[in-house]
Amino acid sequence: MSDSGRRPYHVDRTGDFYAVLDARGEIVCTLGDRLNAEQYAALLNQAFERGYRAGYHAAKHPEDGTD
Image (tube, rainbow, N blue to C red):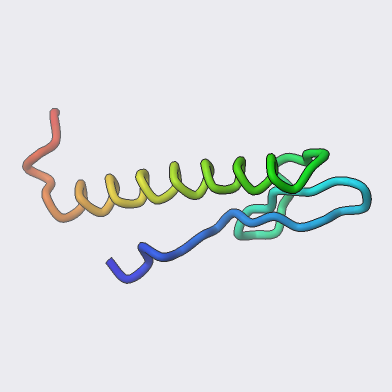
């Protein structure tokens, strides 16, 4: 899985706020301090990676599905 290191969510300062941006550069949310924004981005990245792994596993092992 070559894309496991991808981090699509990142933090950028926007005026007086910190914006959490997705891979397309769209704002997901804005927060008042950098620490909270970084924690939010980390949670989104973790959820993305778990979903990516689950999808990768499902594609490689379709017999594990519960149809």
